Length: 317
Image 1 (cartoon, one colour):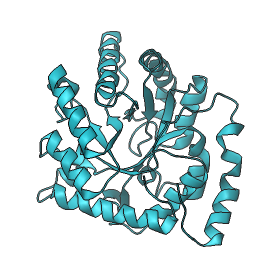
Image 2 (tube, rainbow, N blue to C red; image 1 turned 180 degrees about the vertical axis):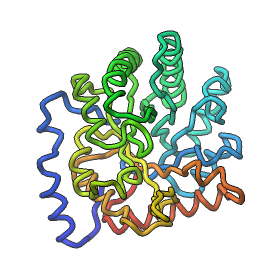
Image 3 (cartoon, rainbow, N blue to C red; image 1 turned 45 degrees about the horizontal axis):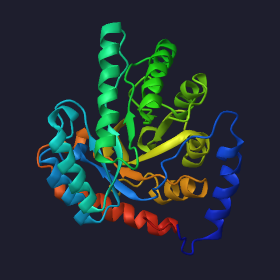
Image 4 (cartoon, rainbow, N blue to C red; image 1 turned 90 degrees about the vertical axis):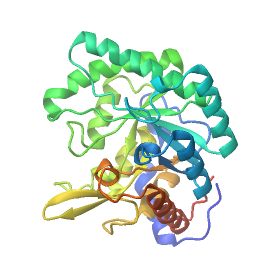
């Protein structure tokens, strides 16, 4: 990937700050990264008002490099909606569009009842198989939040359930990515790292980095510290803004907030060796609101993040 000129102060600072987080310095096995990447993506989570094939065409025409398919039950990308023929046709649409399928968005919050857990393992199986059917040469990451409210009461339970997820992913040659969420039990990078390390740092399991869930925390977690901590085990990056209003955090489209610069995140991850995609996420707080325009949102996210890549001096591909 080609860099354009950028201020030496940022480049020098980021390299020094992230030097200790190089993947080669990990005690466990290196995290398996998808073989291509470094581009800009958007998910279909915020495009539920249109058929999936139409959403793919919109994303491609707007100029993105990759796409994430929201595959939760009831969504336009739910695997249960697609027969073998449907999958072949959608794979053709993706190939013709030039977009990578970078991720499958899931909602696999661990289940306590064993019967429910077994159903969830079957759901994960179908999600990974769906990804392979649409992108046979490059397995997309299956990314999910974990839910729950109390980290201390949930972490061992999460660990034990995710251990079974990793077995499924290994058997199917899939990739998993767990995402800290500011309103869930696992809310910080350090907590995702604890789970991954407890499981022996398997190559098929990484974490999703989304700074909108770390901004405005107490104690504060600056971008530099968050990236330095998360980088060695990050296999996916989501981007959106967050705005603090009357003491409450509201999610926003990339570029609508001014609390941080997404160029700092792009540059820090790129300089640290990350070569995956950066995926714009349109929160349900936005797309479920009256008057939401999915086409306008798709274009706004693209223009905002394209400018962030330019400021970071990182070319997209």
